[in-house]
Amino acid sequence: MTTALLAAELTTTSTGEAVQFWILGAVAVLGALGVVVAPKAVYSALFLAMTMIVLAVFYIAQDAVFLGVVQVVVYTGAVMMLFLFVLMLVGIDSSDSLVETIKGQRVLAIVVAIGFAVMLIGGIGNTAVSGFAGLDAANAGGNVEAIAVLLFIDYVWAFELTGALLITATVGAMVLAHRERLQPKQTQRELAARRFREGERVTPLPAAGVYARHNAADVPALLPDGSFSELSVGELLGRIGRDWDHTELGLREPGGDDARKDRR
Image (cartoon, rainbow, N blue to C red):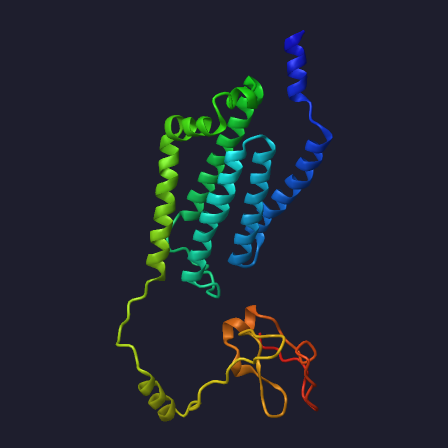
């Protein structure tokens, strides 16, 4: 009778837990889908951070406070900074190559994905069939001590391989970002002489606009007629920055000109 009551308590979910699971679970699934379908790598990284934070909330809700804190500090903090570090080094405006440089990598990726799915389904099925110990039994000696036993005794090789993978990713990002200089770097004097010789713009480019309420690099400078100068904002900032208009900057629109310049 006592065993049946304990089993009923383990399988009973409160209303608060159910609401939390269905709301945050939906947010986690949307974040995971956003990682895959986002058009830009920066958006994918932000969706991944959102999913990791939701997982941390799940850990804390299951009384695994240490694991939830580690999820935020290590994965959402350190690993996400690694991803953003790679994006900054490689370049967020670089187009992806559609040509496979390594033959068979798509087939290998599909095989690995299927193997991972089989392992995940097998692990969940094994737990569902054989049952689970419960949080009280798992944290009997302490939550931190139980995690230490799993990481450094039971799954030490998987933990070490994960660390090696992260180190390899960091080194690979530095190798991809490194560019060999084929000729000496030109000085400002040489660049100015080349601009005169090739008939390019000999004066410096106009600086970005500075206004009382907006001091940003993507705010365009004004020409004498009151229109925006497209040369004052770089090509990359023109694509990822705001498309300002005169009303937002508190300026009067120039007569006869378009109030909004498409710099993208």
